View 1 (cartoon, chains in turn green, cyan):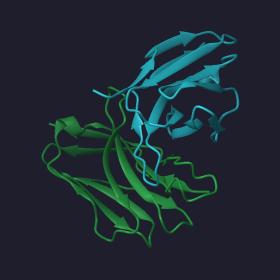
View 2 (view 1 turned 30 degrees about the vertical axis):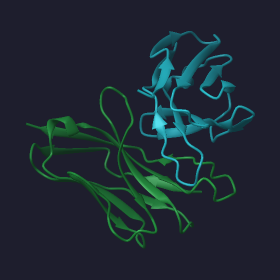
View 3 (view 1 turned 90 degrees about the vertical axis):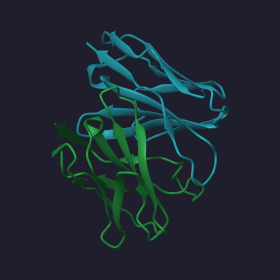
View 4 (view 1 turned 135 degrees about the vertical axis):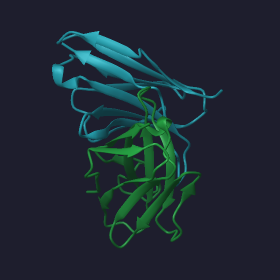
Amino acid sequence: AQTVTQSQPEMSVQEAETVTLSCTYDTSESDYYLFWYKQPPSRQMILVIRQEAYKQQNATENRFSVNFQKAAKSFSLKISDSQLGDAAMYFCAYRIPSNAGGTSYGKLTFGQGTILTVHP
Amino acid sequence: DADVTQTPRNRITKTGKRIMLECSQTKGHDRMYWYRQDPGLGLRLIYYSFDVKDINKGEISDGYSVSRQAQAKFSLSLESAIPNQTALYFCATALAGAYNEQFFGPGTRLTVL
C-alpha cells in the first residue's frame, strides 16, 4: 500500500525567509503524481503545486518549488520569501493515474500534515 | 463561478442520531469523493463515485453510506453517529481522465457528542 509521511508536525519561518517542508512516500509504482495542498484557517484545501513522476524537472509555481528525488522517494516543498499568508497546514499527497487499473480510482493518499507558522 | 459547496458547514449532533452531509457542484465533473480529516492522520477516503450508477467504498467506509442523487449531488450519511466520527469532512470532485485534479469543497465540521 502506498504511504505518505510528513515527519515535521510543525515548522516556523520568519517573514521573507525560506522554509522547506519534507515529505517521503512509499510506492512500487513508476507512474504517479505528487501534490502539495495548503489548508489555511478557512479549512479550504488549495492545490499549491504538483509533480508528475515521469518529469525529471522540478515543478515551480511562483515562490513555491519542489525538490523531487524519485529514487529516494522524497518530495519536499520550498517556500521562498515567506509571507504571512503562507501560514497554514500543508499536506503532501500522492496518487497514481486513475486509469491505471486495479483500485487506484483516483484516490489521493495524504500525509499527516505540517503546520507552518510565519513570524513577522 | 463553478464551485463545490457543502452543507452544513458546521454541525453538532448526539450519539445515535442520523445525519446527512450534502455536497453539490457546478463544475460538471463526473467524479465525486468524500474524505474525512482527523488530526495527525491527514485526509482519508470514505466513498467515491464515478457517475450516478457507480458508487464504491473507500478505505474507511464502515459506519457511513452515500447517495449520488444526480451528477451534481453526492450525500454522505451517518446512520447512527458515534463520537469517533467527529471530524472534518470534505467533498471533492474531478473530471474523468488519467490525471484528474480534485477540487475540494469548504468542508463540514461535524461534532458527535
